[in-house]
Structures are given as C-alpha cells and as structure tokens.
Image (tube, rainbow, N blue to C red; front, top):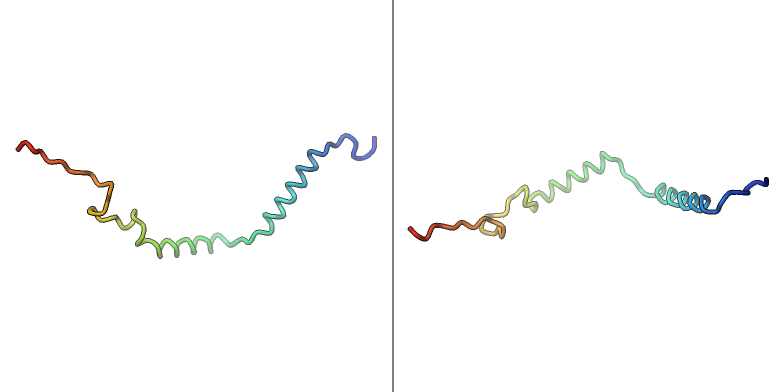
Length: 74
C-alpha cells in the first residue's frame, strides 16, 4: 500500500480550510480584557445621560405611560 492511498480529499480540504481560518484568527488585533472593560466603563459613563433606563423619560414625553381614566358618572 503506497503512502496516501485510501486518504480522501475531503478531510484534507477541511484541514486546509481550518488552517486558513486559524491564520485569520491569529492575525486579528486583540486587546486585554482589562482595557476593554475600562473602555466600556468610560463609554457607559459618557452616555449615561442618554440612557432612558438610568435617566427616566419625563412622564409628559412618555408615549407608553398609563392613561388614567376618571369616572365620568360622578
């Protein structure tokens, strides 16, 4: 049996694709988690005033506020 006999091209093609993907992933620029967390905290602090969950929308401007119905029979 010669070397390479019985080896199909499918696993070799898959291995080549995987190697290419790993090369792409290895070439990506990465930052440390501590830097990413610090950047995220800075962004959140800078945009907190625009967040309606932190700074609520005034009731007069809230389109989802409950409409209060009063009894008209009195």
